[in-house]
Image (cartoon, rainbow, N blue to C red; front, side):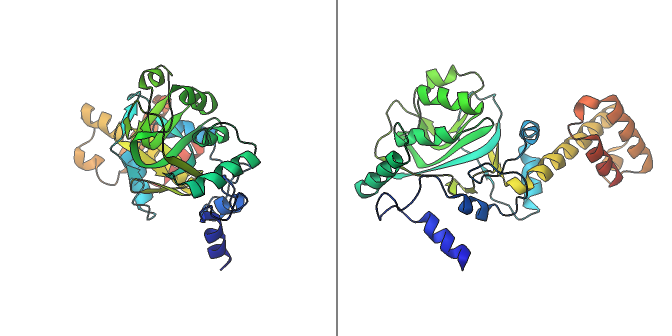
Amino acid sequence: MKFKYLLAASLAAVTLGASAQNINAPRETIEAFSKEWKGERYSDGRPKVSDDLVKRLKDVSIEAAWGIMGRHGYRSQFETGFQRIHPDAVLAGRVVTAQYMPARPDMQVPIVAKGKEEKRSGAPNSWPIDVLRENDVYVADGYGKIIDGTLIGDNLGNSIFAKSKTGVVFDAGVRDLEGLDQIEGFAGFVRGFDPSAIKDMLMTGINYPIRIGRVTVLPGDLVLGKKEGVIFIPAHLAEEVITGSEWIALQDDFGHQMLREGRFTPGEIDTKWNANIIAAFREWTKKNPGKVKMSAADLEKKIASL
């Protein structure tokens, strides 16, 4: 009953005046949705997955992450169909969410008033940027709007990258593509580009649950963006997904080399490895330390499980 009341109160629309709802989701709401995360948190309640895991996430394949999460019942974590800023850049980081809705005056007035009360400056579409820290990714549900749905241009893009060193995922549009292209390393996954400025859109909350296509996204999730699209990983599964994906990639690299060299047959590599293959694999990892992303202790645990 307490959780139901918390959910209803925190997600209610702003209809009762400026004091009805904070712009940022309350810490207790964020913690309630991410209660399976047992690690460190930011002051706002978001799970703080380590920078090391965020860095290693860049080398994870979408397919491996999707497969591991699927075994835990997370089958709707991937979304595609984006246009990209810097198509060769990989996006990885912790999620900060923003929710946008079609504007209506009776909601806009109290939201703007609440922003002033919280001493927020600038237009509401800039407020989520103030929350960003290094390795955060600004993820926004703009309900697919592109024309008059450009959440940022190159000025806000530069501010985002200065704070996060990552990029954005927008179910909406952006403008000033030429300027955004000049931000080296800025990875953007957006629905489209348009010269229009944002209009008739209302930023209704920061770090509440949002929807990006078929995915429900929570603040503190990890996001990985590659050529295929973007995949969102719950914080409590981050370490398992990353180490598991690294293990799959390591086995694949070894197996492919062994097949090219003709040392083992496809049937031997594709089934449970025998003692000779395991010994060869152990020796191969020693000769190829750059391919081993996980710790020595994690590697030994994985080898022991073969």
